[in-house]
Image (cartoon, rainbow, N blue to C red; front, side, top):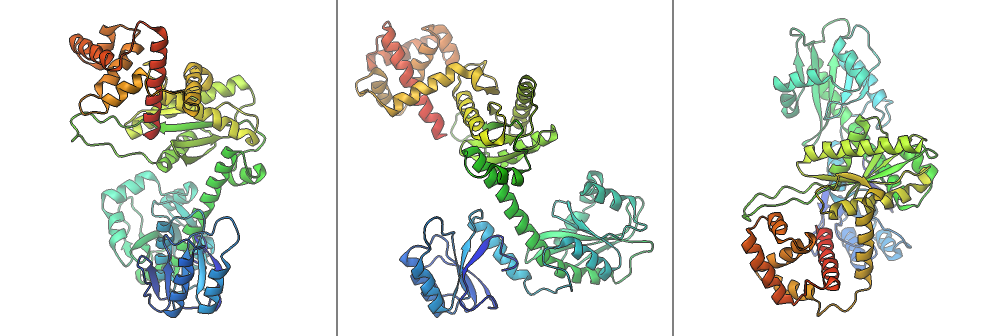
Length: 538
């Protein structure tokens, strides 16, 4: 539990925590049939259901150590479930709300792989600084503990007679890019990842002496330990000492990783609370590090849907997840000196920026320049157009939800805008016509008038047939180009004669009178409603 507490919490432990665990069983069968001492992960089983009670009783008969359910959520706990666990002598564990099943299962598997590893005296679990000091004494050199991407997690304080590479690594908290590139090119990093033991490399030219070992939990690499000499060459026994050190470090790195993941999720939850206008502003500010009483604003970021050319066998670009978009957007803000936190959203990501300038005009100008630069950078990164709705600046984090609402409105207008002059990033005020139109369309959708006999309704029904879908595009192009058939044909990329034939066919099928301004207005509104529905499905 010390290793897994970041992803699971104890609901009930009738036999205490001093119960041996022998393995992991992901429950996906009608009958558990688990091994004695196993952790049963009840994926998909509602902890409030009778099925959960039956599963716990069956796990007790099999003498399973515990059953892990998803979080209980709001409402009173399932008393019958706890009674069953108490009678069966099986512990109840619950997945924490921020973790998904993949994270939980991965952490439990890794924890089981390292739980019996060696310990080092007087080093609390997860105290990496104390661990680095203890390991330095064990291996006889200056120790650096690094993450899989070469970030420095901790280091021993013995900096006597160390070389410049170790010194610059510690100061930057990351291996220098040129050094990492050189080790990647000569294959040292790849060799380190696949070698079960330690590597000892003698000094060679500009590369100083080093010993290193990958820290593993089963097959998963949690990080690495690096040893630099201090005043004299490393001892011939350093490789064996490092092998022992890696076993000692494994539970510490696993605990640290889970702890940092939990802290990161707390930050994301704080941002979600601010954007929704709920929760404590002071607590959210403490978790995010954004000043609560300084001006703030929200950017709503989304990647435009992929346009797949004919034929249908064309390769469809992979979708860009909101989490990846949020990380890239936050990094782009940080590079430009803007403190920000970002979360995934249903239509992309939301970026909350704090500590903006107090002068409204200067702050608005700087925010617009940031959004433009960010849209260009992300468009290049993802190879598809990125749109950014710029929220209105508000005086403090307690009004971040207002900025989020206007940012979302602007993004929605940008995604629906059809003008070639539509910018990649804009505020609501710059998109007033489209925002107003969306409001009208929303009202029509919420309070629809009888439209079963309207021209667009009839045409849409016919256009659902194979090969006839071009008729809606034809009518839309004709109306959007104010009845100029030549421009409409050019916009669709078809000959004027083809466009004229399709337009006449569309008119005949739906019976629209294109000389009637009311008919044209209604047709345009209905076509926009269809486009809005299609955009939201994407």
